[in-house]
Length: 225
Image (cartoon, rainbow, N blue to C red; front, side):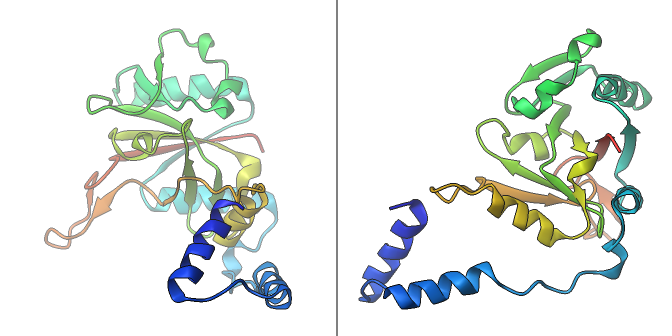
């Protein structure tokens, strides 16, 4: 019995209900697996190249910054350039995520990288995005032991490395992707954060203030075509 089945069994027990019949179970599985898609904004229904361009446009429209590089080897340089342009320290906390191991960080020895969760003194973090959505310029960030959520919210400057092939049109594609990663234990990430631009609030005199409840800056490096 997997985690989902145990939870549902506990709910049925609390309600005084028995096991579902095989017929009812099959009907429910069919309904869950063949649900109708929601309405998809027309602006995101484009060829992939256009989706990448739209994603960058929408992300910049909500005060994120975007850089594009063609090759894995260009990622450390793009990080170094961003730090220099914004007068930021070279001390960085980076997720111990194997997806980030693909980039040749040693080529930029002045980048002082620490792998792990963010602490209060950290000013810059680097994570990898699970997916991204052109319709709103949003990145999907998932968490587990190798992707601590503190990296997404604690440092004032958050750098997200995003593979171009992981950009799609609509949010629904992200949930389909996560369901496709499922195992017999019904794997889902500990958390799924959908991040659109840096943290902000308009509570004070209706004036937008950045960095209210999270990063003041969000920088997205798109890798590939």
